[in-house]
Length: 277
Length: 263
Image (tube, rainbow over all chains, first blue to last red; front, side, top):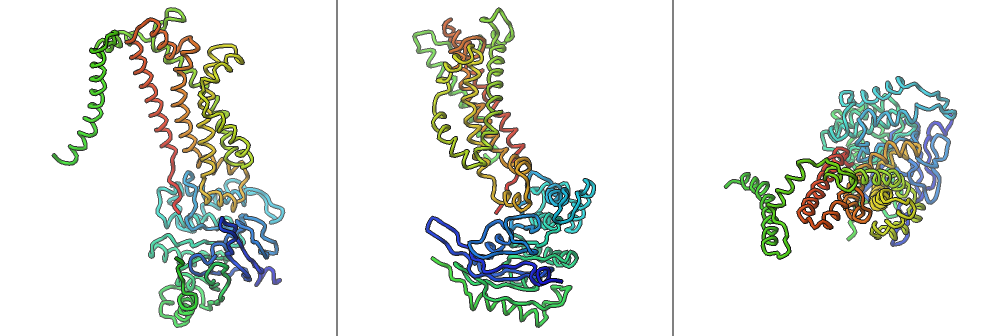
């Protein structure tokens, strides 16, 4: 396996991002260098305002970096595309479509057309419907397929968002605080589901979070960011916990507690957040 | 007295009291007036007379009030429909493309404050007929709220939805159909409601000037006959029809309003 398809599937090289604001330039990110291997689960963690969502948007292609390059599967990221699917923090389901239609929208976009680049032929309507149903089943929502987002709970909406992203079989799955708006119990349940799903699909995932336990439980690698403005990567922590992981057996695992301690130490001792007044 | 009885009194008694106040003031005016201002009772009796046969027709200048209302409604429907056909797509284009918005906004700002009746002579000149000129006036007055509200709706589509469109790489046509149109629909319907309201205001004035069959012309005709009772009846009819139009459009608008994404 070549390097580009293995340990350097996603490459972020010397990336900086500066926003133009009314008060002048605002440097959000500087000197970001990061490689993500195929099948790796990477979390970006840091205090609010540290630019972790900005970095995710750069990988998604929703914003373009002021400096540096981002490369995914040997191709420079020049804009957003379904090969880098995003699970948005607020689910972003279209409220006038049913759960099925929301997922189908993405499935049809990716598999409803033939593609020379990906050596894919156009799939028939029943095949697309099957894919959509399979994705909804994976997140346990077959029963809610014909419901509108307004009729289901926050946790279910987020699951539809994950189904929509995964159904597109993206090269990289990008998640922006996917469980941030949920209550603790629902969050834990969805984290467990995500663990199982990712173990199955072997997806490459980049997730933004501010939850230390979530980061340690899910990740192979935790990228800890310094405080903004002009935030950068402070430290990268490899998480060598065996998979499959279970939150119950990890609860008193010394390695787990050590990783947890390391992240907390970084966030609250070395990067203690100072609220500007 | 408990809270629910109190609420019921507010709900039912208050509107009735308002009506009583109006009729009371009207009675005082008619009693003290020296120029035969009709009383509520005589107007009511006259209304019963008129509504016995609202659809009689004795030639083009003497038709029942029903025919007059219907012809006015038809003019509003045609003028408004044409305005929707032009205004809504235009609003989409102006809302979606900054260039278009910069191009058309000065024109809209300039023309919108002009009373639509000022366009009536232009309509008479171009279309050489009273009826098309009245329709043209309705067209002009109802196009602005539809353009403006549609454009505002397009500009206010939540960024999240547009990000979904960008990540999925949807075609411009698909974005229009699946995201923009449903997201803008509530704004568009507000525009439609405002447009119909204005159109109903303007048609009365336009018909006074153009003549023919129509509720506006009827008012003017009754004035020439010095039949003040019929004018007052016409005012009520115009009000009630306007009320029904407004209510129907609000009902339609609520049916198409979906829960917004919460961020």
